[in-house]
Length: 590
Image (cartoon, rainbow, N blue to C red; front, top):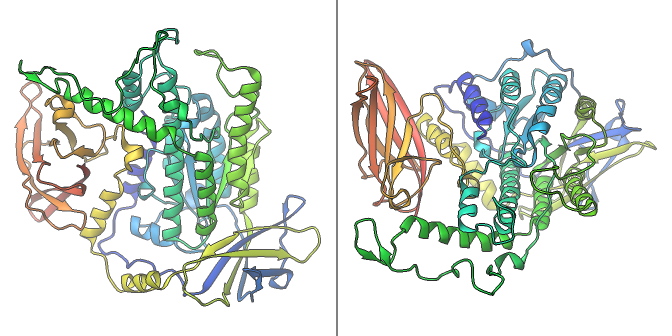
């Protein structure tokens, strides 16, 4: 299980202690001011001596006047000179400054093997130290994280330690499936004649799910960065690339034996009558297995119909509007074969070469269409990443007031041309204009100060992963967080550790937190996503472990009265004038 990213995020959050008061949300610029980062090179070398008169700028093919022009040259700072923002809110506010560079290191754990994660750790560390100045911000994200969990900072030592100490983060070709993949194996065991261990259907579903999880998280990252900043965001994406699955009707065809008999129950078939746990006849003797079969069938049909090729096009379209550029790198360096030599037999060479080309094409397409860079063709990963560093240390920041003052919410194209011969230019290809409703909403939000309590709730809710990424993933317990257990039909009504933070209404939750002898107990309340207390009770108590003598604070809650949605369990304890507040966010499904 990959816990490194969460460890890094928690460590950075400890550094960025929340300040007592929150700044109001950022109101993004004027109604028609547009900023453009322009990268000018000649023969692959940055051009340093251009002026505003050397550029033509057009919006929807209409010439625009360049109102502001600045040549940004970055001098990397030594690690000891960097000072982190004082709080999470300040880091987010600083990230909104278009003159400040923002980097996101994205580790595609699903499509990088252990060898690749080892090979890339030192080049990534060198890259951060080479490219970052005193004003730059960097954060780390993986498919297991939501973008709200990214903690931006200037110091890279936490990320460096994480990369060095937890370098085995690559999961590609891992023979150890996660909980969700084990479910596929249980629902679709190998047919007679198939290799033992994993059927074709389970293997295909696992591969499709992993790829969609990654693309989902990249979409989420892009939307998040669009919401917090106008300036360019550079996303350094470490991945072997993607196959870009298309709809495959054959995946939905019921499996049969050689003599034509159905192997799996037909979707929607009523469960057989049998003897339940209490020895009585019931139509659902194995309620948990029946629920798993329903999940398997639903996801089998959903995964069979995904179109990731189109989804990638949607991604770089969103990235252009959000001013997000992807710098993609295959950590394997020079690659001859895509598939490993075992334990399963590799495909024919021609098939393997086609798959490898598709993976690299997907990385190149994402980079080229977002004004980034795809790095391939060298085993010197340090040299490859230095190319990104060189590309990002000199650029021109332009600003103009669009002659189109309509608040219509439409996409507008941007073209930048350099007049001097031989100078190549890369810049964002366009942006989406604000709508009247968005401008009014932003203006209203700018006048509202967000209380610290509500900001804390928002941070807790941001830790809940989207349904597609949370299922089958274990949520690591962070420092100061309670242990979470649940019981219900899905657990055979037995108390079990919670893998994630998404629960059906039929569950009951139990939370436990270590406490020293003599420290006060806690009180519990259930809040909705707006921070309002609900009437659903949280029963607080305590217990002492008979074997070890460890004292535990406990809290229990029944989810049945709740509707579907996001909630926050608030646990507070008071010692003198000091109050400790712990928030655990959950998602309840119908």
